[in-house]
Image (tube, rainbow, N blue to C red):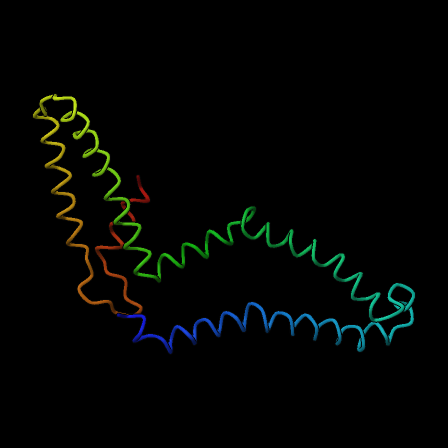
Length: 172
């Protein structure tokens, strides 16, 4: 099984995510609060009346900073095109996501047509020439779609047929 062969890489991936998402984040926050208080706030007497102690500083910065950062994160995902751009880049560089998109776009109409024909057959209706022609057309599209299959993935190279199919999907 592929999981057994990739145990080291999987552990490395989980380690990096745990480190960057939790460990480094917490230490960076503690470091930033400590450095800014003891090198900036403590050295300027005008700021001492706002932040009389380190704990007051933490409470005020967290009280203002957390809601502000929640708003910035919300804006990033919901109100700007930043996240959409990230998703587009992810789709461009990840051949697995591209293939899933293409397969899904191809299979949905096929399944819809099949279920439509199954309903007709279950109601003892004869399939019309148009039904059979539509099914044959879908079969041809599936055969053409199978030609898009990458024979060998090459890092950094997007297969031309995949790009053309994605462009075609964007136009529709």
